[in-house]
Amino acid sequence: MEVYILDSLNRRIEVIDDFVSLIWTERFNSKGDFEMKVNTSLGNRNRLVIGTRLAMNDSYRVMTIESVEDATDDDGNQIMTVKGPTLERIFEHRLAMGSLSGTDANPKWIITGYPKDLANKLFHDICVTGVVNTGDIITGVTEESLFIGDTIAAPSVSITYEIVPPATLYDALKKLCEVYSMGFRLVREPITNGLYFDVYMGHDRTTQQSTMSCVVFSEGLENLSNTRKLTTSTSYKNVAYVISPVGAEIVLADNVDPSVTGFERKVLVVNATDITDTVPADATAKMIQRGKEELAKNSNLMAFDGEMPKNGSYIYGFHYDLGDLVEVQDTDGATSVMQVTEQIFVSDKEGERNYPTLSVNSFITPGSWLSWDYGQVWSDLGDTEYWADQP
Image (cartoon, rainbow, N blue to C red):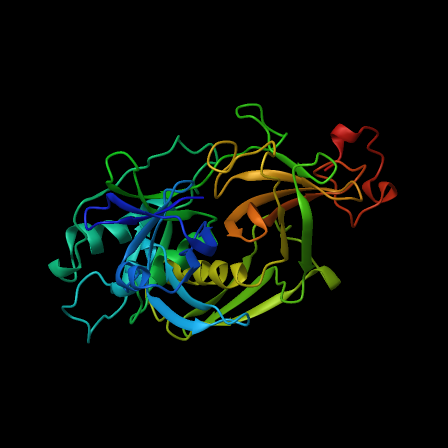
């Protein structure tokens, strides 16, 4: 790995080739971060200062140094540790509001449209148009993608998104993108050094499609090792009862059967006292959106990661990227469709390695059909004879 110092125009001006260790992390719908350790020297003290931007040869992301610590390690070596986030950190320094005027009467920012369009609007209005204040404008950013078009479709349902101040642009973007499985990024083009912002969905690289080459991670295929898997349903909820002063709505989590009952029905009570719209349609839309947002915070969790060999079959940024759907086969033969939510690069005395963090999208159990409900048995389904006729 090669780390570079950038100037104010994001041009590479110096290479850092003497670092002791580096951890460089990129994320799908939140800011990334890095930690680099270097030997203490006058040169490093002068060049690795707060505010310095860094780039890496395997990445389009840019990191900014926000913390510098100079200390002695366990072996008696004087070590500088520098840390900082990706450029998306700037969104935490912007207010998510449509205007500062009339905040006493109506402080909420309410926007309606498709989720991806709304996420782009948040960035455009605050950082390009400067609707709150022209000082919030970030110059030199192009609003388009550097990468090939998504093959995962963007959400096609129009929503009403309500932002209650004080909220930062970062929180507003992150919340919306997490609910609808979207990513956002502010990246550097390595040739022109220009910055680009886009909201993206990723690509389907599973064996269930034929448009793109498939990506299947498995220890058996020797493209993933030292794996770790965490599965939990501790906080899982699939039905939200949204209660407001003007009514109530029952909202289902995505892909949940409306007839779910008994022990399979996990109810979340949402107190929406701030929804007071007198127009029924407006109140309903806001309660449904609130329910989906809260259910997204209480979903099943399956997290998986592992190390990729240096000369493995898949290269990040070429065979797969953040947001992509891939398949993972575990040692029991189970296959899971998972989304790449994080990519970590590590360089230290043990060498260079990188690995993705994957979050569950759907499970495929061994010997089963993808659509088969594990809670049913054949006799429960009547006289239907063929698998293709099963619900």
